[in-house]
Image 1: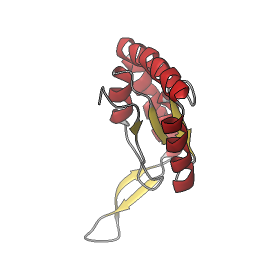
Image 2 (image 1 turned 30 degrees about the vertical axis):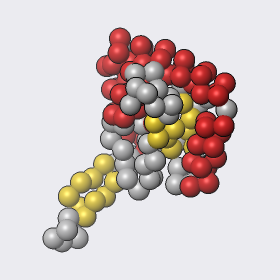
Image 3 (image 1 turned 90 degrees about the horizontal axis):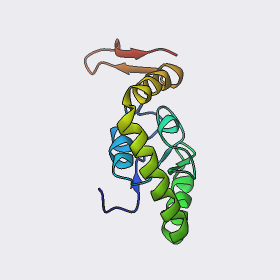
Length: 127
């Protein structure tokens, strides 16, 4: 992961990403992340500072973000520096980030997962 120029977290809006651990791991290593702009991701990633956020569920937006990142060495260097600084902050003050993730889940996650055996929900998160 440390040698990557970018980490991509292409989570779909239907799949609520809990703690987006890949973001924390990448930032701790100084690697920028491209992720959808929903749930916990915007709490960890500052667009064009330490990573990139794209329109959730949009293959075109994800593709454009990847193309931009891969074709612009100056952007990659700037985001890598930003990710390194963000990673240092996350390593020093992780409880604040954990609180932000919990808040994101409460604000953005409305999930009703039905049990495979019947129609009753087995997981519910309410906004």
